[in-house]
Image (cartoon, rainbow, N blue to C red):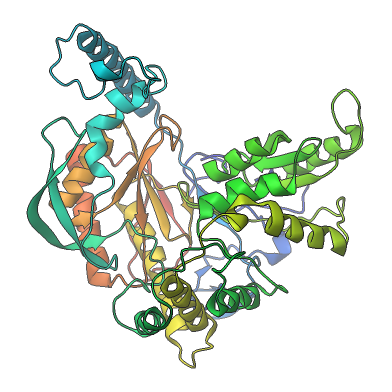
Length: 537
């Protein structure tokens, strides 16, 4: 369990509760990034949290004694009024050692296979350049592609699986086979039907071929077609694009918004349009690769602060303002703080109640920035405009979420997603798995660690009709490979129970239940405060 200075008490005003003898400072416990003062804490007379009433915002949390008397209630309808709790159980030492040994053995065998390929002893030569291409610029750099050739290709069948249905709560997969060690695939003609989908970012379940989103998308397709084949600055700007941006602005509570068709391009292309040489970028250490690439392309000086650590950010920010640029000590032209809202692979949420009144931007700076993005950003100038059916689906789904469609379907799906998330995470911790991330995040990372278990977990789950996503190095640290489950409002309790049973079965098969702080089962109060039990290894 990692701990940041944000969670430590600065003086006697902050107190801590001990859960079943397990201190929050110890590895494996829950961390609240916002310690509440003592006067806001519930008394210690055997109280527990009341079952949450999940609302589109964040719901309400109440502290209730055994007699049923409500003694404390926090209205957390506002986004950041509820404490953020994140779980980071430290990697067991033996697991870390075995993981490094596994990668070491794979590396040794990789070099051995490269040696055999060089002397044409190994029969698979797809990883090498063809003889007739030797005079051209090489497509493969041995050192840079060593990992791809010898490690990634062993488990490549776990990714890019083709589907032949809507990526909803259940989906159909096209079966494929390989005869050259995962370098190429052939379709067998068989379809794996009714696979429970735990890998798509279908949070509210709007990825469906029936319902208001599908109907509105079909209507717009008949009117506008499937694409415009032009940029928005030429002849690709439609009224639906402008309506979508207005809808996004209303949802965010801002004056206006700009929409881009690709998240990676948005981050990597817009940052260089905002800052450049002589500017400073303060970046969260867990930012996505697209943000990292955009920061590097900008030519700005980059400094990294610890994740969700406001003291680390404030320290770097004060130093930057006081000392200025290196050598010359001139003031920075701009200082840009780059963070994410949701850290997908770690299932973290950005949280900060601390504001920095050190940087004040006048209104014209925002207008200039918007003009720069519109006129200079390649993703705004050269990118093809979004497909009209996709735009209409976004508009319709956002209207459902905001209640502008005259129904409560959006509210109900938000509530269902919250309930599914809490239930799924709690059951996994009860089983003994190590789960990372924010307690309310529908992206659930289950730690696998060892490289051999990455491919084995994905294959064993698919054999049992469960589709999951597995993630490894370099997308994660080398000893923190994981499976990433994406919970949806479209998942029923029966689907989740079926998936949990399969996960438990595969976890026993592959010995993945590493947690030493197992959560005690409690079906009576699914939203209770977490109680941990020390498990001796």
